[in-house]
Image (cartoon, rainbow, N blue to C red):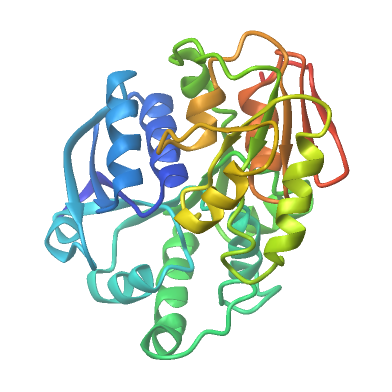
Amino acid sequence: MARNDVIAWVESPLQLIGAAEWAAAHRVTVPVAGRLTAQMSATAEALLARGARFRDLEPYLGVPFSLLARHGHWLVGDGFSGQFRLAAPVLRPHRVTFLDDGAHAIAYADALLGRRAYARPAVAERGLTTLLAPFAHETVLRRAAVGRAEFFTAFELGEDRVDALSDRGLTVRRHRFEWTRATAPAVAELGRRVVLGSALPVDGRMAMTDYQAWVSDAASHGPAVYLPHRREPREQIAAVAAIAGVTIRETELPVELVLAGATRPLDIRTLASSTATTLPLVLAGTGSTLRVGRGAVAMTGSAA
C-alpha cells in the first residue's frame, strides 16, 4: 500500500461530484471505485466529459477490498456507511478524507465529536455493521489524532464545530462547487419553474397523496418541469406525470450537474433535502430562487 496514494471510494452521485471537486482543488488525478448503478455510470460519464480528473474508474458491488488495499489515502463519501465500517478497521487507511453524503456530513462530524451516537440519522441500525461501528470509529479517531483525517465539504459545519474538530486533529475545507460551475455546459431549456422530485414517499416519510398535492401546488401558477429523484419508482413518476402542467424530464444526473450551467433565473421548488445547501452554491449569481417547502432562498450573491 502506498501511504499517500489516493483513491475515491464513492457510493452516490453527490459523492462522485465531491470527488471531482477534490481532485480539481488539489490538482491530482485520482482512480475511482464507484458503486455499480445506472445513475453512478451516467454521472461518471458526465463528469469525464467535463474534464474530471479521474482515471481507472472501477465499478463494484460490495467492498472493493483489493483496490482499497493498494491505496493509503481514501476519499470516502459516507462515514456512516456499513461498507466503510467493515473496511476501515481491517485495511486501516493511512489517511481519510470525508466527502459529502448529503447533510450527513454534519451528523458525522458530531459523531466524531461525541455529540451524538455513531449511527446513521433516523435509521434503526442492527447487525454486523453495528457491531463494527466502534472499530471503524476508533480507526478514524486515531488518524485524526495524528492529523490524517479531514472533511472536504460544501456544508457549513459552523465555527464551533470546526474548532472542536480542529482540537481533535481533523481539518475542514469547504468547497462551493467551483469546478462544477466552471465546467458546466449551458442548461437545456427547462422553462421558468423547476420542481425537484423527492424520495420522501419512498422512505415512508410523506403520504403519496400529500406529495401529489405539493407538486400540484408547485405547478399551479404555470408550467413546471419535474426532475425525478434517482430513487423514485416508476409508479411515483407516473402519478406526477398525470398532474396538469407538469412535464417530466428524466436525466439520470444529480440536479447539481443538471442546473449548474443556468444563466437566467429559475424558480425551483423542493422538499427538505441536501439541495437546500448545494443549489444556492451551484446557482449563486443567477438570480434564481429555491423554495424549500413553503420557504424561499434567493440565490443572487456570489459563490466565492
